[in-house]
Length: 327
Image 1: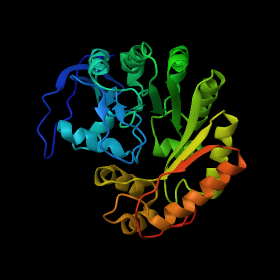
Image 2: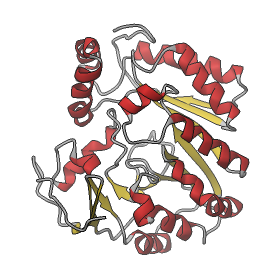
Image 3: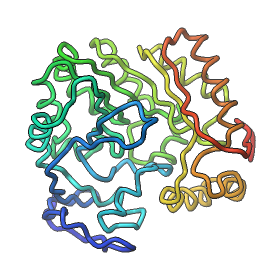
Image 4: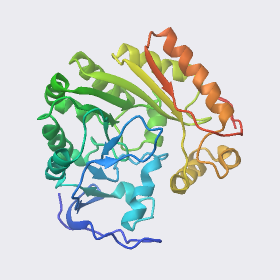
């Protein structure tokens, strides 16, 4: 790795954050810099969220998913260019010490902690910096926690023994985000993420090791990854890999995500672009009728394959898209 950093210039409404520390490395065109943090546990302000605390070991994500909702988090660091989110990764090297302080001063009993809500904790940066493993090592010292990890990263299997140690003392589940089984479509949607096959292999390895796993069928991308036979096949594959739950949600397309997704749509599915603009309009959520039909399909498939836990995220909306049909 090179230590020379080629800066991505800050842009937009926000000044460059004083939390940004020194440059660390450059690897495969991705720039790493330290992000100074005094706290790692962040309280979730959204009342409908199924967790109380969040932990994100990194800021930004190299996987570069075209639909990623979390790109807005770079805005507050002074980087509104959508490319910065996946090409300038901020590493919270002080995370273990910050977490130790948090665990001394915050009430965590009975309050769930979600790891990886705005960045993937097992993205490629983790191989080099190990922040996620350090965080899990700290959590493993405690009992009675309620933890979940969300990832597309097959690297999670590296930490199987550590996860088992946590599982013996706390409640733990690992959620695998898998949007399609089509490797060509996955490469276009999620260009630097592990293949769907590798994610299912990781799911099966963790399940065989006694770790509770779930399929996060999120997002379902209207008229692109939502053919009902494909959704049913994903759910069947997750069951075969040992998943105990399925959670599904349609594409969430806030304005910061549109800055990336609409150009991607223009380049890959130009015939869908205007329909998306009409359907989403000023609302970040897919239309109500679309989500209702999605819920029917997912619930039926979950019943067929014997899943006990299943959830389709609700939200208000009015316009309609058709599952598996051109917009």
